[in-house]
Amino acid sequence: MKTGISSEKAGDMYEVAKETYAKFGVSSDRAIKEALALPISVHCWQGDDLVGFEGGGSLSGSGLMTTGNYPGRARNGDELRKDAEFAFSLIPGKKRFSLHSFYAETNGKKVSRDSITPEHFTEWMKWSKKRKIPLDFNPSFFAHPMADSGYTLASSDTKVRKFWIRHARACRRIASAFGGNQEGPAVCDIWIPDGSKDYPADRLSPRERLRDALDEILSEKIPASTITDALECKLFGIGSEAYVTGSHEFYMSYAVKKQIKLCLDTGHFHPTETIADKISAALLFVPGLLVHFSRGLRWDSDHVTTFSDETRDACREIKRAGAFSRVDLALDYFDASINRVAAWVIGTRSLRKALLESLLEPTHLIVDAEKRGKTHERLALMEECKTLPFSSVWDKLCLNAKVPISAAWLGNVDEYERTVLNKRK
Image (cartoon, rainbow, N blue to C red; front, side, top):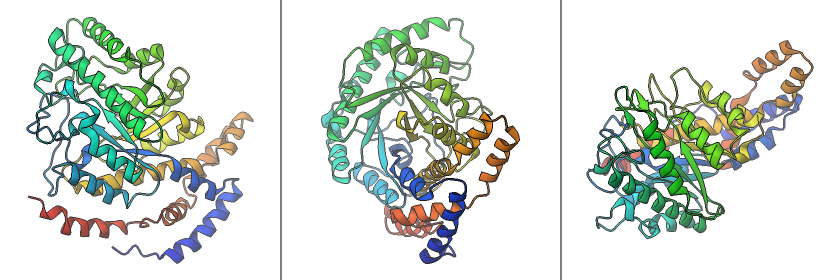
């Protein structure tokens, strides 16, 4: 696809944009460098609709759902890695790759989730080291017979609860192995679907069980140099519309008490509730945050992340708080109705755009106006920033990263779909 602008023209337009930002005291060169250096953890499950490699797993009753049947879903580790590598070739900046536990490669052997080991992720770690793509990890508390009741770590059934505790402990060891195989720790994010479709009479007991289960899971001391633990809250899910055990209040309180990271997912709150204001509040009391960028439409539907106000507001808040070093940035969505590789590219490029835009903001001028009581000036600057020549800086960022500018990458995806994806049965 022709974008209507050449690399040479993009370079010329950037020089004008650079001069414009300089008048606001902002170095666009520095912003580009910083934006490219911020790692984004790209989620593996967009590539295969959260199917995994166990075989026959169903998302039914898990609070999760994927819709659509676009051709070309990855069916094994080699295809998933190939698709991710191709997507990464179109995405500027540092990337990580986040796995769920049921993407283990067991050579056809049936391995219980509470018995998985780093050995079952050998191919992933080889790929990670070869491609210099750090890995993150997620226990999978769904699509399993032991999760059919709708409860896992908060289950009243001791056998079920103990199974999932063993699973989580095994996953933390795998994440630690990832961290030992790469530069820096792997993020291990715990999310569970536990909850009730209708109003429960006892909301306390499941949360007591969840608290005790987490205590047991986290009691195993693992070097912080290899793992970063995070806990992810949710407002509701399919089958847990009335009550979710792991609510925002529960996990925030627990994260503060244990001093571990809290995960805020942009799709896990009320449809009109955004996470931007929660960032500075939480950072006062927890060591850091994991932010999952998604897009909910009317409910937590995990649509592809876009360059939306919500995405941009969250990135600005992290920048204004000077907290990029304390916040892990990740994506969490899956859409089977569109080209899956394109979904990766759209979402990751959109988040990278929002990061760049936040770094181009003349925050020092806006804060100074606020301190001087010039709130009209603060508002005016915020508004003027919206029409600064950001797109020219974005094109320059892509040129620096040697990836297609504007919508030129769509042609690459079309060719990949024709030559690779359409050949998958």
